[in-house]
Image 1: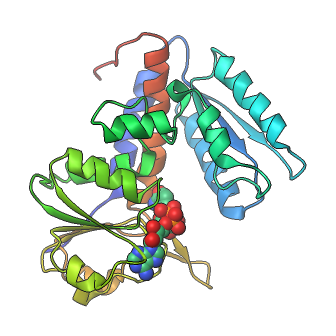
Image 2: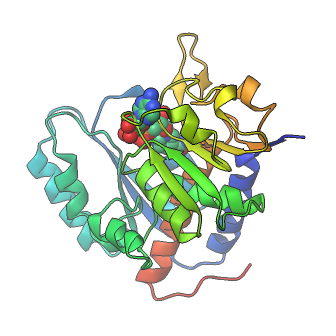
Image 3: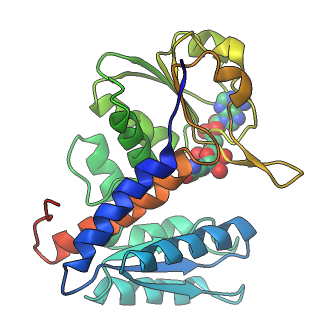
Length: 286
Ligand code: NAD
């Protein structure tokens, strides 16, 4: 029997807890989101982040810019948000307009307010086995999903496909920190099938629709699909040939409804945790 991992339900549990905890706070966690591109998906992601944040009782503000925004203006805004004690988390929705330097902007965010966990200090702390101020949301969500379904990671062969800074690399690091044996594959990897066939757990984050076929998966493997690929009919599908792979896997995430909802739940959890740290508060145990 294959278990379809329910990311929506798992995310709802996290959000419900955060809502209860926030209701008992005098001051509320606050998130500033910067949208400086005209990409339709980015607009949707930002709207969804704003809606979820408001639904938890957080204070959120979205800074939307047209193409006339300059690097200097964005730098000034980051400095202001860094200095503002009423802002706990700063999120810069990527990609930015092409004329803007996103790496410079990310590195200017105060690491203690870096809700996405993209600042080199937070990435470095994660790699050193130190606690970052925030862990990248999608990788954090993947680990939470695996734990929610009591999937043992210790000594397991995990193949992560994709080596981006926001998904593949931090996911590999987190899995290693959980004592898994990790192989990181990417677009230049040879004989991908031979490698995935050895995996107890596959995490695919490539953005290539149906890259992971049934004959690439070992019977009983756990399959986590991070990919989001829009088809010509507007439907979203993952990196995994879900209908075929689901007959082989022991656990599998659907797209949509798997990793996606966890990303946003972890973003909210990061905002809440940064708020606690900045205010010297302990987490409420309820
Ligand atoms: P990216 O484009 O930065 O990286 C893609 C990676 O896939 C690269 O490292 C590349 O080497 C690898 N790759 C590409 N083609 C490959 C192939 N044929 N074989 C093996 N490896 C290959 O993308 P990203 O930002 O890491 O995102 C990856 C996917 O995950 C996208 O579809 C994105 O939309 C999705 N995503 C989902 C969430 C979520 O919350 N569910 C969050 C972030 C990204």
